[in-house]
Length: 328
Image (cartoon, rainbow, N blue to C red; front, side, top):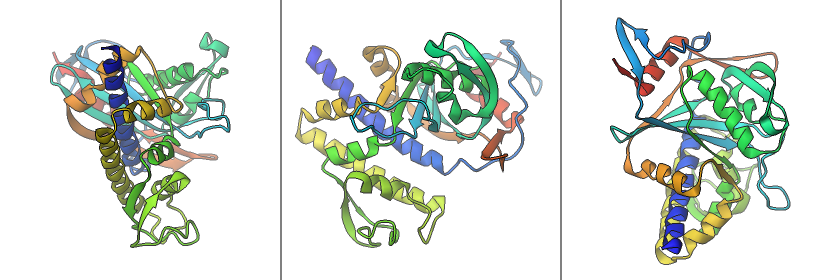
C-alpha cells in the first residue's frame, strides 16, 4: 500500500508540474496589460459593503500560490533557492470546495505592493518597502526556500486585500529541460525562424527538442522576425501539448517512470505541508471544474529603472469579492 501511495503521489506531482508550466507560459502574455492605479488594501472588517450589498468571507475557499523562479540548477545539481532569485511568474489558484470549481489569478511580477524584508530565520521584519512583488522572494536574509515562499505569500495576501494564501509551490524554470530530456525529447514542427539564435531550429522542419534547446524554443522572443508574445505563446502551447502527450505515454508504458520523474523533479520543486496533505490538495486540480485564468487590470509604466505595474483598485476589489466572498 505504501508503494502504491508513493506512485500516486508522484503521478499527481508530475501532472501538476506540467500544468503549472503551461499556466506560467499563459501568464507571460498578460504581464503588460491593464490600466489604473492601486491605492491600498481594503478594510479588514469581515463584512464588506459594495453596490448596496453586503458580503462576508466564503469559508469554503482554499488557495495555492505557484511561484516560477528565475533560477537554474547549480553545477552540483542541487536545488537553487538563494539570494538574487526572483519570482518570474506568480499564479494564485482559488478552489471553491463547495462548488468544486477552481479559478487561477495571474499576478504580474512587476506589481507594486508591500514587501517585507526579513531577518535570518525569518523571525523579524527589518524593513517594509513598496516594490515589485517578484522581489519578495529575495527579501529574506536566509537561504531557506520555505521562508522565501512564505514571504511572497504575505505580499500576495496584502495585495489581495487580506485574503489568506493557504499553500504554496515553487519551481525553477529549468525543470522544463529536465522533464523534456527524461521523456526522451519532444517533437515539434518549428513555427518560427530561429536563424542566429539556434540554426538547428529551421521554420517548417520537424525536430526533436532536447536539453537547453527545448527551453530556448519556448522562451525566445527577441531576435526573431516575429518577437510578439502571441507568437511565443503559440510555440509554448504547441510544446506543452506535445510534452504532456509524451509524458503520459511514458507513464503508460513504464510503471517506474513516474517514480524516476518525480525523483528528478525533487531538485526543482518546493512546497509546504506534508506530502499526503499536498497530494490531496493538488488532486483538486484534476477533479474540479477549471474556470480559467483571470488577471489584474491595471497600468504598467517605467519607473526609475524597471517596469512597475499598478493594479486598478476598483477592479481588484471586485475580483476579490467575486472569488473570496459571498453575499450576506
